[in-house]
Image (cartoon, rainbow, N blue to C red; front, side):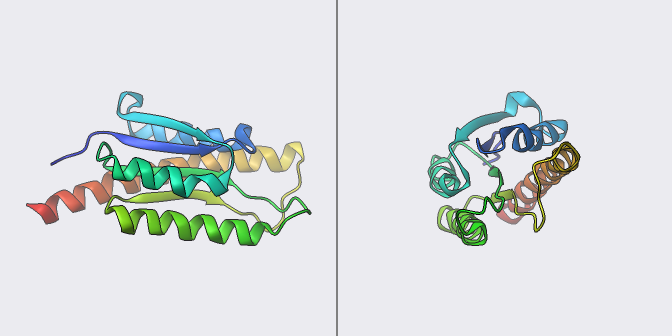
Length: 144
């Protein structure tokens, strides 16, 4: 069975940057084939990704977040938990779950850094769309 629909989950923290990943994703996959879901933050993505993957409606699920060192919590812990959770969601569901979750080493909330990361997220969104299309094609060929 071919899936012509994709889910895109995006965290609301730093939405002005994270939303650019969806822009890049939609450069390769038509908006009519993409359902978009917002979650509060990166930590909530794996659960929603798993639920979407298990729904049987999607060929792949892409998830985008920007996890930065806010000086209060361990951002490296959050980033690792998110990536591990997304991988587990894909393996447990049998549906590809792709990560556009970035954790910069040196981020400062300046106009310069924000511009750099907005553009970077567009590129990462394009890459996720390309990966989603490629893995769906490969899995279809394997099933034939």
